[in-house]
Image (cartoon, rainbow, N blue to C red):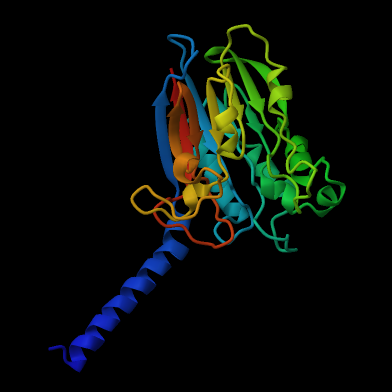
Length: 297
């Protein structure tokens, strides 16, 4: 039979477990910085050619755990990996209205411009880079303030655009898709995003050079043509809360199918980054912030 002391001890244990888990998810894990490594050879990748890709996604600069100083730390950690190519997958700003105290876009763009690579630094935009840009939303058209800040800092933004690079691994096509969820509110009969997969692919020659495509949201992967060797995405934060590899809430129509990590379907490869910052709730559990390093070939 349980006495009062046993009941109180049990309740105290439950309270400490709940509050301890909450503190971990709100304070400790979001401040971590992991390096997640993948080694793969996608379909169509030239034999014997190697390429190191660093990927940063969903920084959400200005949010609770990502002040300007954190951006500097991320740049230093990414440079230490000595990548051939560094790719920035969108959602640079916090997932809320901008505050006067937020770091100036020019300041964090200048920090990102310190990224060092052999073959360049390229970016795409995410939904929050559009959603919290009031003039852009009113016009339902760009350019965005985030995109302009990156371009002024010398970082090309690929929006439905493909470029041919002479990379460490030889000729390579790098493509960036416009955001698939760019506009709020969603109006019937009008596009929700600015993505143009067909138009982007039309810029890529049938020359045998492999194609890497950046798309902020991973849902486009179901329609990705075979010509694309590797698709890179962010957006989901891995669900932001994960239990044994499963997330209860994923911002994707496909749920956990494209929530996180390396996915291979029908011979096609997708890597979804868990990102750096947080969205909506400032917590992470089971999916710490990460810099992704992909070694191809």
